[in-house]
Every structure is written in structure tokens, then in C-alpha cells.
Amino acid sequence: MRAVVQRVSRGVVTVGEETVGEIGHGFVVLLGVGREDTPDDAAYLAEKIANLRVFADENGKLNRSVLENGGSVLVVSQFTLFGDCRKGRRPGFSAAAPPERAVELYAEFVRRLAALGVPTAQGRFQEHMEVLIVNDGPVTLILDSRKLF
Image (cartoon, helix red, strand yellow):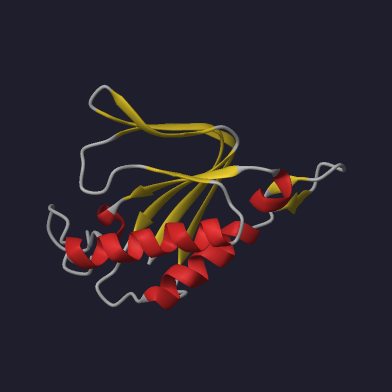
């Protein structure tokens, strides 16, 4: 499972004219589910993201988590995080989980975040979405549950 985690002052997801997810300060997480992922991968990333210390404390040091900072997380599915661009000009997506499996693990990740006490909002799985990300910092991190990078 892969995640691009962006610290934001605001995040909004729309499908057509409908706003389906919106947060103030916190994280927008673009989440990709891999073919080999399990619920353990969802649990690992949820715990890691909930406790990442990338928010400023009273001394201006990046020492507080989204939980400690009272933020929220907007989760957006993004299978293209498993795109393989090493060969040719068109990415291959064979490492991405099939949609029926990916939706289960995406939901598991959101459930795990919520169980840790993180307020969550979501995009809409397998829909064309417009994602507004107001990056704060900017702070952007790339995580992989298999610790490949």
C-alpha cells in the first residue's frame, strides 16, 4: 500500500458538482492499494499517518501529529501510485490491486484511521474526482507499507 501524504490547510474532493469530502487543516492522503496488500498494510499505514510528527509545536518544531494537532484526514483512492513507468511511454498498472479488492482495503484503511481517533473524510472510489489540495508548508511525504522507499 502506498500513500502520498500532504499536510494541508484545506482539502476538497468533488465528483461532478457534488462535494463528497472536505477538511480543514490536516492531511490529504492519496492512497494506492497493491495487488499483494493485506489488512496489515492498511493498519500499518493508518498508524504511521495518524502519528507522523509534521505539525509545529509551540516552539515551531515539527513535533506534533495530526491527532495532537486536532486535524483531519481526507483519503482519496489513487491506483496510479502503482503505475510502472520504467518501460515505454504508457504506465503499466499490473501491481495495483483489482478494484474489488482495492475498495475493501481502502475502506479498511479509513476504518483504522477513524478507530485511532482521526476524523476522516473520503473521496469516492472509482469515480473521476477533482481534488483541491492547499498544501501547507509544503510538506509532502511518500510512504510504502512494504518499506520499499
